[in-house]
Each structure stands twice: as structure tokens, then as C-alpha cells.
Image (cartoon, rainbow, N blue to C red):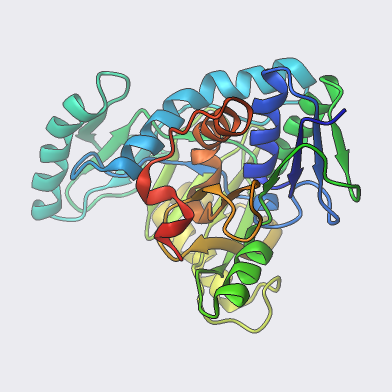
Length: 342
């Protein structure tokens, strides 16, 4: 007997399948392309928060998910014996000018209340070889940001699921309660059914450099994310392209990202590029994850629209979707419901 079928083996689908399996459900995951074949098979893996101000449901949800992440990924690694490459090492951002410095100090104060003492946002002097040059001599360091390796995280979830007896298949028949976590393809089907766009794929390009900085924080500078991984590589990215002709091809826009990363962090000046990636990330019209009852399949469910923050949102998305599907407990924020994008 199958209790839950998840259609789609990206991060939302795999994480929700894991949350259901941990609650004792019999789970089946089906994806013709295999785990992490779409946007979840990227390179960057920056789990970074929104700024601590003008608080809303989306920021609160993401904050809770980032706090949950350490325990979530530790449980995945323990169950399946595969490391997702998770580490909460924080993030550095240079401060551009006096106005930005004043704003950063104000956010330092607001983080004390909004982040509830579970993480810090602070202004400090820019020092050290892994610190980006800063026009003001200061950087922002937050202790909430974390990293993981997207491909290894998907592999870790698959290993953990199989240790519970869950099926991860390329084809099969949906049984039990069904969750559709099919990314860009799912948004396209919804748009076709509604006769207007309810979401779309946004192309991103990223690169992987050979440079061992595995115990150092990620950096956001020059408009790019620079994320050290535990395997001695550094991921950088990414572009955000609404117009494109080849969704999986890299081009000069990625070359510009690589150049910006090298300029922002001189330690990477000679680091060789060992991989290039491009793919489409699913963005719902509301710009928030789309969670809840599926608009086209009565009695079934949807989890889509992770866009750039899918991995950071995944622990909390998995938790609320498992509670909804298994126990009928609805804790989805109003702005995350499909109606917000329809």
C-alpha cells in the first residue's frame, strides 16, 4: 500500500516525501528524468535569509525554515549515510557607502528582535583573505546563512528515502494522496489551463571553481553568490534571465558572473572553472512558493515555485505539506496558496 505519491523529484518533492516517510507513511516518488534533473540539480546552494526588516509571512516562513535546516539535513545524512554538504557558516557582504552602512546598522538592531536571538546580523571591520574588499572598510556578517551542495542534497534525500523503504522511480502509477512538485513543467500546465501565466521558468547560469574554502562563509558581493562547498570547490552564480533561447546552455552571461566573482573576491583570481551549469527555475506569479490544494486535480496537492530559495524553504515546505496531506492540518500562509498566483 502506498500512502503518498510525489510526482517530481526536485527539492520540494524529495523533501516532502522525506517528511512524510519520517511520519511513517509509505511513499512513492516518480520522476521520468530522475532526482534533481531540473533546477534542483544546480551548483550554488546558497541558503540565505531576507533582510531583517519589514517582516511578513514569507520572511517569517523562510526564517523558520533556515533555523530548521540544520536538524533537517542532519537527519537526512544520518538516515541515508550520504552528506548533503550542509554547514551553517554564515555570509559576508561588503558595505558600499555611508548610506548603506547606516542601513546595515539599523538592520543589525532589527535583527535582534526579528531573529529572536537565534542568529545575528552584524556590522564588522573587513579583514582577512576571504573577506571581500569594501569601500567603507566594513562588511555585514550574518550567522543564519548556510550552504549545501544541491546535487548531493538530492542524492542524500534519495538515500534516506530508500532506507525507509520508499520507492524512487522513473515511472509508476500514483497511489494514495498525490503531490505534484513538477517545477517549470507544472507551472506551464497550470498556465495553459488558465489561459494566462501563473508562473514561468527563469533561466539561471552558475559555475563551479576548484578552490578549497570548505570551512569559510559564503560571500555576496558584486551581485553574485560565492559559496564554498565541503568538497573543495566554490560555486558562483547566478544569472536571472527572463528571455532566453537555450534554457540549458551557458554563454557570455556566465563569463560575466565568473569575472564579477573574481573581482569581488581576489582569492578566486586563479581558481580554475571545472563546471558550468544552466537551467530553468520555477517562479510562481506571486513570487512565493505555491503550496496547498492543486487547482487542476481535486483532492490532490501542489508544491511548486521554489525559484531561487527552494533549498532554503524546503525544510518548512516539507513540514507543512506533510502535515496537510497526512493529518489535514493546514498551516500554509495565505500568500503561499495557489490562489495568490491564479
